[in-house]
Image (cartoon, rainbow, N blue to C red; front, top):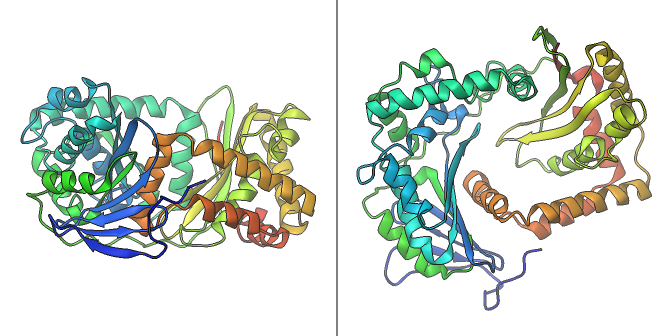
Length: 433
């Protein structure tokens, strides 16, 4: 639970820092600001000796032009390879020598650069992160080396069907749309990229107005804002690139790929709801009931514990700005694929037509509430979620509101959402044999 900061006003108040033109906003659970250059800042207090912070950039695979396959992920790698002030070794040393962790990842709609540092080293973290995010130079000699590292990553990924299938499944769901693009890209295309290609992409998408800085720490927010103002003082506001929202029509289909693997890998699912759709919470609850991490999930009991048909089974969701996806993954002997599919279709059919009893729903809510509360104690992950929510939706990730929404889900809502998403006639299926 998020505890209200002592001394914070009940109503939002907008303040101007006397030392700058940053706009600061106070709220019962968080503080936020917009820097003169356009970078947005979101802060939540956590009483720990460690500061969790980073940049969320609105640059993901869906931001790429057709000729820029893999560029968002490529830029993430290259941001560690040299700036106007630091070479690759100095970027890593600057934080690692004080025991900090520095990392990054690329998603379909954002790239996140993050660190965890002792709170007294926050000035150093802000300086290094800002430098590598906004001032990378992408030297060609580093590109030529790093492309081969990414090529090895792609080759390794293709050798892991239990991971590769998730990306190929999304390609099927969103075929013809930017969200369907593979994050890692194509090796031959990557090998053709130059410094100018990288700089062109960076200029378009790494503008301050397309960036959010998050902080989850026990620090003085006004001081953090001043540090960020100093670090970004040479940056100028720029237009935010439009968010790509084009989606092709969805057509369910079944695809089988011969991978020659000992175990079959299968995903079945469908398109689902975007981040602003209130039905996303019932879907999350449904997915957890069916195939969440607990051993008592319905599909784990049905397929593994009672019949021994699968090695693993899980249900999962993906949420994007304007759409989303839901799927069930399982791994089994090739001879058991069709039987597992029939059993899953039967289980989904029951979810569409038979409301949960009040007792069963209450137990499911208790379970997901406990999982959620345990999950937010992973402070680094929670902090990144704080930043992503502010970057994508301009809203605070209010834990209390999330728990209230879970508690408010009704049996009828679950049936309605199941019919919308999980009806067997709507499912797309990908099978690796």
